[in-house]
Image 1 (spheres, rainbow, N blue to C red):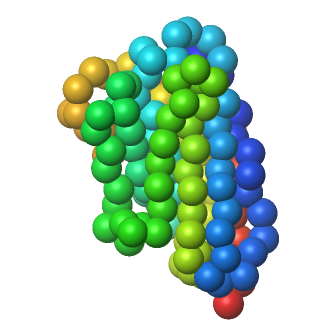
Image 2: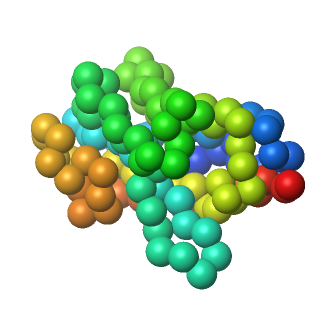
Image 3: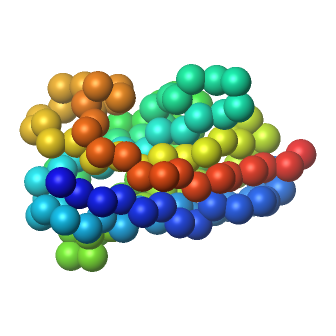
Length: 126
């Protein structure tokens, strides 16, 4: 198993930047693909970005391409989400997730992940 703890959320204005961090503890970090999902009030949880075990495959949802960057530091057991040019529609609780599947199958869906953090709130004011 792996335990995930997110940090870095907060209240910002449109156009600002935030960096979310997810610290993983437990099994070897490189055993997991990692991803960020988000859930806005009244909406279902949606995929944001994912990175494969080795970091060789990275995918984003269309709405964040060019603005968000996911990265992983396997030496520090950490995955980051750098969010630039934030918009009010980015407001949500952001969840870090880890999955045991290898390859890229289900990399962009909740089905591909087995462990979840508690979430961190990101609020973007207009």
